[in-house]
Length: 466
Image 1 (cartoon, rainbow, N blue to C red):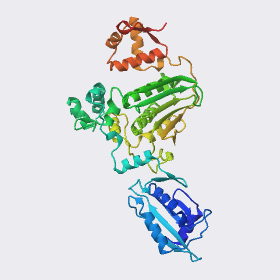
Image 2 (image 1 turned 135 degrees about the vertical axis):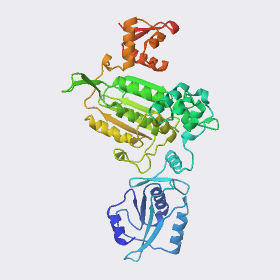
Image 3 (image 1 turned 90 degrees about the vertical axis):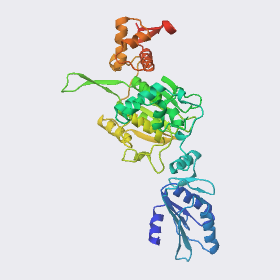
Image 4 (image 1 turned 45 degrees about the horizontal axis):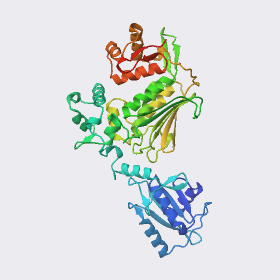
């Protein structure tokens, strides 16, 4: 490393990978920064440069070199640090310490870990340190840890069978799986080992996640206006496994996004289009569920709908050296929760590894919508979709044309038979799904004011609202 290269570094000032220190009087701080560079993309610390970028140098003795060597020994794990002593015109020396990006992160100096935030060295939070240890393979990820609070009987067996059936249809699960017992199915997805379930199994298939898995939490809000306030049009919370959270979130979003109707010049039938692309919303929800940090007991997913945008925030951070601006470019896929992501993939909830976010951008572009934006804050990541035009809200803004096929069937059954019970509705439906899904459809129809429930328990009947 020659003086010309040093002068070029100094010219650009302190950055996320260059730091100035006046002398070894600041050696402790210099080594903290070196640790931060090792935990990032590498960098150079220059000892003998003033804050304003002047080369001042310092005297270097055997004691100075020994002091530096002792300081470098406090880096763990052991790191390759290139140390150069460059003699300046004033016969003093510039000390250059350089490290390359390392695959051994996280590093600590004197027992503490540091990271670089632009031109500032900061103490690394425990959660981030833990995440890097998982990535390095030093400790097991949270989803692989055994749970002592759940057994196979505590899982939703019907949901597991549906997941297998959908995986077979998508040709991502072997057809022989339909004849396997639940234990073998769970083993094949790495959800069961030596008779013990892991955390991933609970997140994916638990019948009831409370009270031990309070992080399986969803908050849903439709706000009046364009900013968060207490003026809720609709406000819900939900605790449940990942697939039920997906259903609840998707149902809430579909219920509150208006549909625009239009005619194409070459078609006679009316075209209905949601305010946002359905597939883009689906991809964003799957990302939130697969990539979030479930190790936080207080973690949650927030979905907020405003008059001009929709946002989804989830607990977790982007990988090291990854910026939000990189998300719309081609990038590698390294899911935090590999087991959870694999089951979502096998069930055909997403199509390709590392392509989901790019597909979101493409879908918005195809629908002439603003590109979605990503922001990392408060220990989480948020995606925001902007609408073409602000959406209005009326109490019953959803009409019959906006219902799904099964909901329309239910309306037709009530029109034909009048007041009927749940069992009658199920018997009249074509290819009825689970009773839980039908109850959800009935709840949606009731909430938007199309039907009502009379009576209690076994005598309860559903009818069209007059």
